[in-house]
Image 1: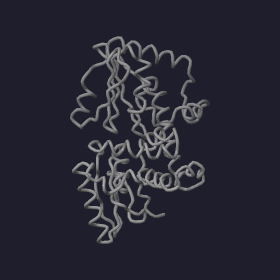
Image 2: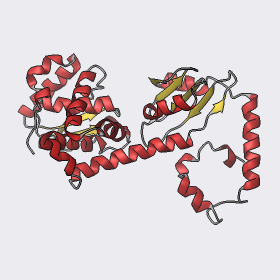
Image 3: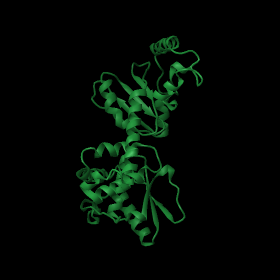
Image 4: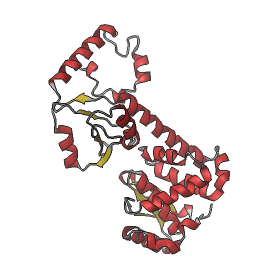
Length: 299
């Protein structure tokens, strides 16, 4: 499939790019002139991935000349050169413009599907997103009927997995009451879902101060009592460790945990392990990767 350089990404609009994005476009064009195959490296965020996709149109790249990869999983082949990453935060207008263009042809679910897909942790995810966007911008409204296309199937698979991880977060995040009266939880899964579920917890716990930290993705959501939304914060290693160790749980929390463990022991199956009845049911409803930190399983 040839390049589908949409009108909203004409190279004549390149003055709208940030200095970093302009530099990357120049680097892309230089390497293309040398007939190099390019790997565009992305950070694991919606902004970085979509801004990078937008740059392929400004640079008028053909699909066979480029592929996208997450920064931490990038492995070059012999004839490839890596470029990037672009964090996308200085080029948010590109992200909005791209989403608007895709939504024009694919309809209302576009934003939700892109958010879910781009949240999922998989080395092949950015390439799947890129190929699906190319399909949509090439076939326009007809792309809605191409459900059997390999590009559509791959993209929707990642969107479905991201959606499932959001549901896991809503189900399995457990708050602990801290000594200052606020609530705290740490949670990680196979996708960067905290920004996607922040509004859910803000609604459910609107009258409480709370923070939820994802150590794997370096993200935290923080809520102030009475607010209708959470603040989303990107954490460096120092700030992450400070949040994880800043507060101690309250005495009340110790009693609550003890009460819950006693209740669980009384109503549960004794010695429930792999050879006991009910183990398969537990693993079916809650994958073992979420068992870490379950107080009822502590000795």
